[in-house]
View 1: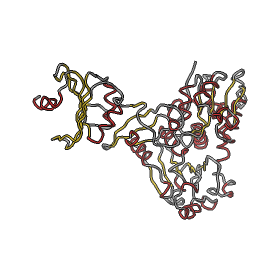
View 2: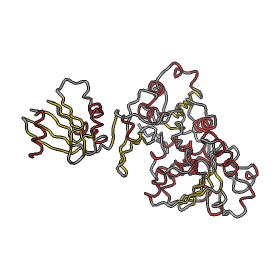
View 3: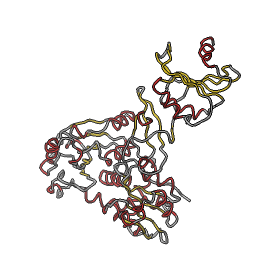
View 4: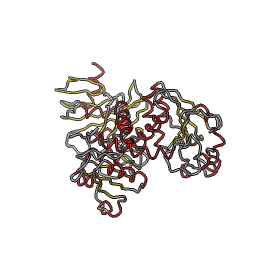
Amino acid sequence: MNRKSLISIGDFSKEEILHVLETAKEFEQNRSQKILDGKVIACIFFEPSTRTRLSFETAVNRLGAKVIGFSDATNTSVSKGETLKDTIKMVSNYVDMIIMRHPLEGSSRYASEVASVPVVNAGDGANQHPSQTLLDLYSIQKTQGTLENLTINMVGDLKYGRTTHSLLQAMSHFNPSFIFTAPDELKMPAEYKDFLTEKGIGFTETTSLEEHLDDCDILYMTRVQQERFTDPMEYEKVKDVYRLEASMLGNVKKNMKILHPLPRVGEIDQDVDDTPYAYYFKQAENGLYVRMAIIAYLLGYR
Amino acid sequence: MEHTRKELIVSALENGTVLDHIPAENVYKALDILGLKDINSQITIGINLNSRMYGKKGIIKIADRFFKDEELNKLALIAPKGTVNIIRDFHVVEKKKLEMPAEIEGIARCMNPKCITNHQPVPTRFSVSEEKGEISLLCHYCEKKSDIKALF
């Protein structure tokens, strides 16, 4: 039996990433393919995440499998003190795959080691969320026609934002160049910059949102969260600086697209939604096809 | 060889293992890492011995015990310049340097408070890397780096 799990984006090779994206394209063209008829998949969410859970459960249903699970651990034996290991062992006995979200970092890796079926990580705390990364890649490929040689401008919380870190790792297969736009307190951590330098990938850093709007292919916006700041005055200064408005997009590249993992708060003004550069809602929809592709691939059906 | 003989005369071992060039402050940690706190073997410990090469050093002599390389190499984390002498019949029959292990299991605590290993009975696993003389431990589970303090 195929026991490959998807815990971290690094678990997939470049070839596997491209294969999953290709498969997602197929599912976008025909989004009801009952290839998993008779299978049962567990969606176990130890913390609530409506958006991700609905997307995964829709993917399972569109593939013809049945879903069991829970969306909150409070009414389960977890609240009685059951260990994660025991929960996973028990659920493994019933299903063909486990999709899980858990607030503790590393929980999904551990689950994949005790489970007898493939595990898909739907987010383990602030660590990894690989299906988000794959849907980001899918959105980039779809809007640009390629993943190769693109300039990606990442904006916002680059210090704690797991989506930017995973995307950076995944894009490193495709000869990108990066622009990191962040306030000093939330700059891209040194370990990721070292990673790029080792791979010979170029990047520039700026604190100004305006500075590199016109020379990127992808503008990857993230939320700047108040709780990340030690000094509340700093947050007040920064929160309006990183606010994208339609009026700022006059000279951007024609092919430029704005991505955002959502939910947004104030960092993209609503007037951007109607420009041809906004892609964040379509990006979320792409998540469905990508998650179908991940499930089908890990179960050996694609 | 003269040097070795003089050193070992302090409490000559008939058979056993001598761990030398351990930083003086890490001797107790070394005992801990090797699980020597609860064994019956005769153990001689020296702390703050003068060393021409390293200033102050520590030394641990364990009678009638021999270790696998994997066990000993864990000590490289706290004693990168440590050496091992294997004694049989009062003679050093083998002398080796500690080598940094690529991975360690169950001997350090992840410094990330949100890591699963700090909340559930999961043995820790780290891959070890060394950059500019600094050792860092990458958690197999939460993928965060801890520094050497994670061992203490």
